[in-house]
Length: 449
Image 1 (tube, rainbow, N blue to C red):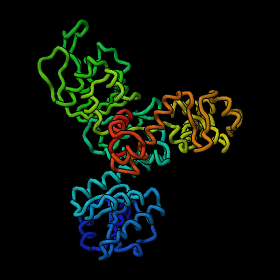
Image 2 (image 1 turned 90 degrees about the horizontal axis):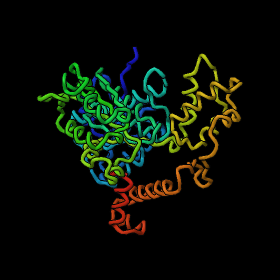
Image 3 (image 1 turned 120 degrees about the vertical axis):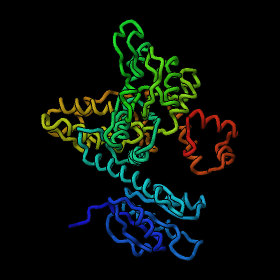
Image 4 (image 1 turned 60 degrees about the horizontal axis):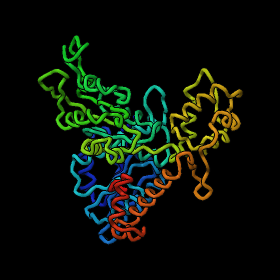
């Protein structure tokens, strides 16, 4: 019977390293060893560990070429570069060649196990996306941006909270929260739409109350945070939380304790909070609408979701997915020119807008094949324009100031990737160091930009 375990390629010239990795592997993995690029079997793998120095010549990092070869053969392969040489240029070369992460030798058993756990979580997410089953949350798309989102989700498997998901309305924040939660064993998942809760009932709904705490409180009530014990509490549209309640949420995040309204004693609960917002909370802090200390508490583990216009290559797959959900009641298929027309649209409403358009196409298209003219009748007029220089779609309806701010942030990110020295980046952009720092903060550009 064929071995059904996951295959880990380990490329290292030291057989003792290969043996030590083999001894640390979880039972669902098996090692395929190779001492050099020439010994790498021509077969698919689920992951690869590649040593950077595969000969006695310490000045040459042959492993970078192996990483590039493996990545070229399978762009989806999760490649982990390993080395005792922590030279920054070497580490950067590994990432550019196609490695997804870099681990320093000597590897600990715990580090190997944790790394493979994250990779396995990513493989499961990709498998679910490939199946596209509508019965569960699934992220559809194979663009570079989508692969990055799935990698970030997988990295959060087993991590304590809080977790913050930021993205425009309709980009899939609730889907991502569900996927993060779904990586754990069976446990509660409680969702709260903060914007739908009036200010005067937020505390009672989230933390509960005791009998007689206020008019109408005729019995004790467990709050949603307590109901999420040993699970996840998803706070959607966290930007709508009034300042008067933000201090109470902050206290809960810091202490892990809740006090029901009207109660004297506190109760300790084990809850991971996942918060989501379609607003720039950093800007809300500047405007005095959101507490800075709460933002820093939420922002430790952050996923920024790209708008659909930034991953236009995923539009055809998403459209196919939504039309498939309409079967067997309506059997409709998109023509290639219809897919291209959908791909060129700016999608200011993101994935949610695309879903509604596909529902309309399924309902109103007269033929089994949806034509480009059918798409033209359903899509709203105006808003999007194709940039002839880049080929990308520009949502002109967002306004000049917003578009210029996005472009400025993009240029700064590019400059920071090209040059690590902040003084040189400032000189490159022709601005002062203090101005650069301010722009980095204004655009919420992280250190990993």
